[in-house]
Image (cartoon, rainbow, N blue to C red):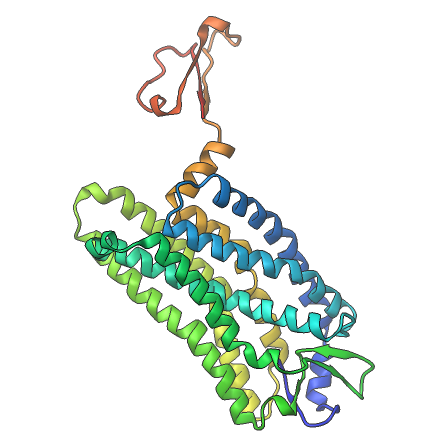
Length: 351
C-alpha cells in the first residue's frame, strides 16, 4: 500500500514509484520465479503430508496449514505478475483485487503465526513433556490452525470493506492496493497505527516468542542425557532452517516496513523498496517445504523412502559383472545391521 489519496490525483513521488523499473520489471520477474518454484514444491509437499505422513502429529497439522497458505498465495501470483507487467494497471476488477491482496498479506501473516505455533508446540513437548502428554495435541493443533486463519482474516477485515482499486487521473491506469482512498483512514496517524499494529502482531511478537521457545529448548537439550541425541540433532537442523528463512525472507521486510512507515509520516517515499521487500518475503513459500523436512521426522522419513531409494552397489575390482547369485535383497531395517562381506556382493534395500 502506498500514499493516502484525497482525490484521484497522487503526488509526483507516487507517480515515480508506479513508473519505476523495479515495479514494472524486477517485481514481476521475482513473482514469476516464486510461482514456478513454490507451486510444484508445495503441491508435492501437500501430497506427502496428506497421504504419506500417517499417523498425523501436531507438527504435520501445522505443516499442512502452512502448505495450504503457501499454495493459495502461489495461485494468485499470476495476477500480480500480469498487473506489474501491464505497468501497474489492474484489469481484473475490484473483487479479484481484494482477494489477491487478502491472500498476499494473509499468507505472510498465517505463515509466521504457524511457525510460531510450531515453536510453541515443540517447546511444550521438550521443556514440559508431562503437560504435553496430558493434553490432546492433535485436537489442539487443529483448533490453533482455525484460530490463526480467523485472526488473520479479522485483522484484514478493514481491507475487505473498501474498494482497493483506484483509477489515477495522471496515468491511464487502475492500481490495485498501491494507492489507498482517503476514506479508508481519516488520517495518516490512523494509517500508521493500523499497519504498525499488524507489523507488531504478525512479525515482532512471533519473533520474540520463537526466540524464547528455541532458547529454552536448546538449554533443555544441552542439560539432557545423551539418549536425546537424535532430538538434539533434529532441533538444531530445524532451528538453522528457521533462522535462514527469517533472515532471508522476513527480516528485510520487517526493517523495510519500519522505514517505510517512518518516512511516510515524514512525507518521504520509500515505497519501491517496500514492495521489493514484500516480494522477497513472499519467497517463504519456496523455503517452507524445507521446514517440513527438518521439522517433521515423519515427513523426512517418507521423503527419504519414496525419493531416495537405498541402493548400495559395490563391484569387485576384478569382476565388473555380477550374477543372480551375487544379488541380495533385504529390508531397509536390516541394511544398517549387515555389512558387505564380499566386494562382489550387491545389496538392494527395498521400501
